[in-house]
Image (cartoon, rainbow, N blue to C red; front, side, top):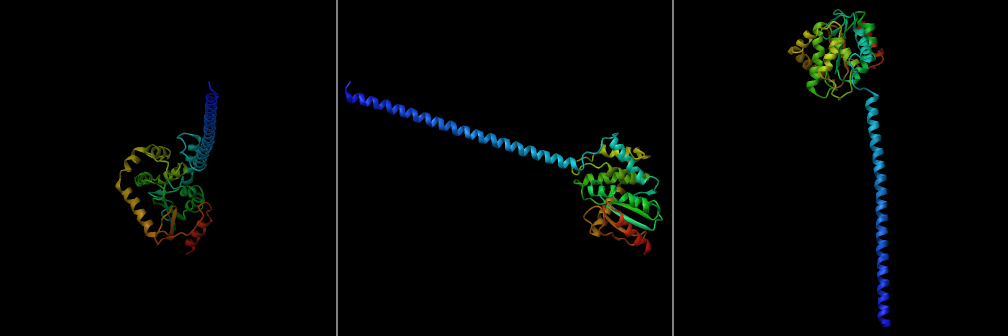
Length: 276
């Protein structure tokens, strides 16, 4: 083999080695790049998982920190709520949607939505003291009126409000209303079902379930719900609870801003009506 051919073959071998090294280097760089990408994807996946878990935890905490599912029938919490609800109105005259003596000199009209959480705050807050001081002593009568604000479905709103009004046929509407607020579920959770309403009715002392079920079909209650809503509209009410106050049988006026947990504002308004 001539020196020229030897040099050419050596050059070819060198080129092949260089090409092989270049290919290996390229492959190593490619593998390194893949490893970096895998690491980044893993890190992103971990971050995404942490974010998702945090969102779920916050959602659970937010849902469980306030209202949740209604207490299970027969549970200790349900029994305690029923006892508190019924004791608030026990022994006070009832007639339809009215709590209190028909000869009470002052009337308060209370516009509420049974699913309204703010109405629950009022029911468990200022209302018991108002009932104890003014309604039990025969000085104030309270009318419960229906105004849809918190309930998402109009048909569900009518269903629940009519169920309460039908209990009034047996002078038990305020027991039903108190029970509903005391055992209220989480807003917009769809907890108001026929089973839920039946469960409340069974906790109302002395309520005849057969008659109550039949009375719910009376069209006068649907008309009353619609009429209450129209009165609220005429008064400019767009939230619950809202209140009117006045001498019984006379003109009613809006009750201004009052605390729903402190009864002092209600006390002042009632005293002013009694003195007028």
